[in-house]
Length: 416
Image (cartoon, rainbow, N blue to C red; front, side, top):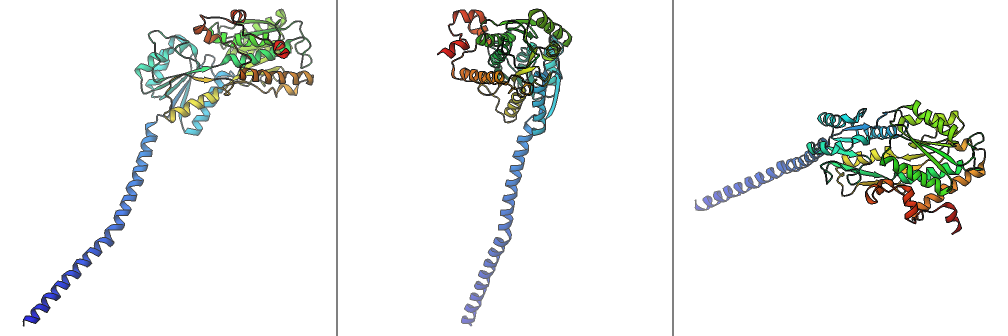
């Protein structure tokens, strides 16, 4: 009996052991795959949530304030808008553009865009760029791009430091203007005509139209005039102001007077949409034209020598990309110049189709490339009226040429 009891106890123990093992195996088989699947799903959900959070945290509403004159200038405004459209397509942006027609209402206009929910406001109108600084303090979550403006050059009442959400830039307008001046003086110099029937008036006379009398246009004008005097020290550069950017008839009248009464062979227009009237005057009066801000060589094909380009399309794309990548923070203003392609002149491929003196045309192209190299290596220092406005008490080109010892001519460099 005792032996039977022991055997029975052993059987019970063995049965309990088998049940325990069976229970452990069932737990492993059932739960392990479930745990693995749950972990994977959770990771995927977290990644998706992180992506959605990042995507939703970026305000994709971008507004562009155009310079007075609006779209249709085939220059400053149009190229910026083209850049904005490219960004809209690439990044699926919600965009808007407005024209500032009244500078006295600039602050109101900027505030309206902020209240409309735009996360990035890009301003091209110089006359209201100062308003961005005060508005920025009230909307710290919005970024403001002040194209071509920086506080130390253009003071704003009440500000000694730039707000963190105001992004400043500096465009070396003097550099491509210098090259345009060289091209103008070359063609206007007696014996250098490149297209029969154009120019040919006695002397080296050039006319320039600006939209306003301001330091920003001094930067253009002094750079252009230095380039003209670099090539021909006897060049006469006549400057006038359209006092606005939209009156094409006024610009046409000014340009016609320069051509017919001042013997100007070349007209350069730096006055927005109004400049189209000046270029038309060049065509109607057998003179050459030079465009500005965008490639305007086809505006009056056959009359346009070249255009002094500031690449606003690339500038807009540059800032929108940095904004979307949360990379707008600055320690210094961004600089756009000849060496990095921020400014340039065209390749003159349009007028090349009309050239009748190929030898002189080739000479002009070689001259411009040499000047570009001399600017890059410091052989030529191009005077910058905008920087001089803060660093040299508003010095202008004539005084700089007389006192700095840095002005050189083409003839002098060729003798070295």
